[in-house]
Image 1 (cartoon, rainbow, N blue to C red):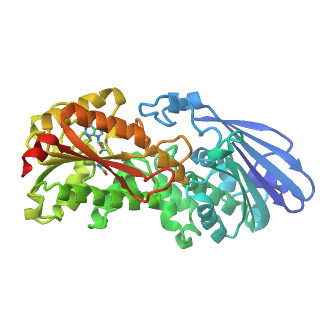
Image 2: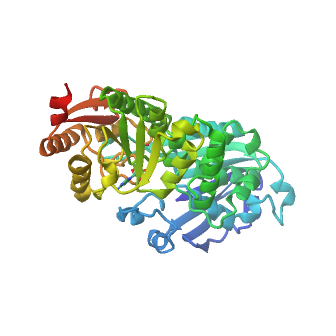
Image 3: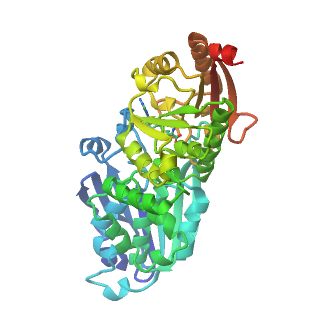
Length: 469
Ligand code: SAH
């Protein structure tokens, strides 16, 4: 990963003093995640360029547990974009290698550190999740000219489309301290991946490096949210606050689970609507929500008096805790119609018998394929509700998500994502083996070529259909 900083000012070699680095030397600095090299590829009277080259050690990241966890896909621990793109690692490198300049200090040229000069910063590869317009919304209000070059996913396969990676050049007249602070905060915001910060005082760091510009920035909310995301305790604290402030207009999907892709948030609502309608049409009164997560569907179902008993089941205690907190805000008589159970869909569970219907929304893709057959028996053989409404992503649609790199799943924990034919083959097999009839419905905007983003199957137990009238 390469960042170059150019100043157009005479004598340009002053950049060495401003950065506290001798332009005549090439220096290396060991960091906890690799090596940073600083050198000056260009020093002329009127232009001087300093380069910060980051050589991230992917194996070291795994050993230090600073890199992607792999979460079951252990190859991702080793093979990922972290060594090649501007991310929070580069922010950390800036603060460690150019600490004084970032803080606005220069022993040799204090006046110059306070002076706005024409600078140009070039980031060889910047992931812009949120697209070019988001990139511009971040930097243009700060007075930069933004020039970009977007890179295809693979030059050999143009039909795969573009990647989220850009070469970005920012130019503007500012103080070096401003430029470095903007980069420090905004690179991880654009990257929007898990951040690997060193130390834990992140809120303070954000406030310090955002001082003087963040509070007036039109995107300050997005910046703050993305900057602080995915950080253990902090994320929890933030979540707790969200829970308190959120009221019924909850948006857990956008704040917690995945990236802020508005389309997806809308899709989440469309999906819950579709599932609720299918459950209503099945005539069910007592329903299960299997893999209920944080309970959004549970709360939607509670608004409908047809559902007299609603039971949410999930394997994640954390998700259930959040679901509980949100249910606790409802009137007591409404709460009384809903229970939460901790359990795994991999194991036969007597508590799941005797229900009219079950919803299984965006859950099967979290199960390991070899264990799907265990799940099938738990649901269709033992629990055996009259109706089952089940959804899963349609992988064909992924090419329509602009910010999703080709070949990636929509969520890091997905074990698979199926095409329509794969889903139908599995579903028809299940229906046949366990005595259910099934029909399919698209959910979300339907594309002529790739179908809809979510696919839904509605199963009805055959003997129930026969004995219903
Ligand atoms: N149905 C919710 C959540 C989907 S995310 C919604 O549509 O928003 C998938 C959920 O399945 C997570 O909450 C996860 O904890 C749960 N899950 C994954 N494996 C499970 C298992 N074996 N048993 C029960 N729940 C499981």
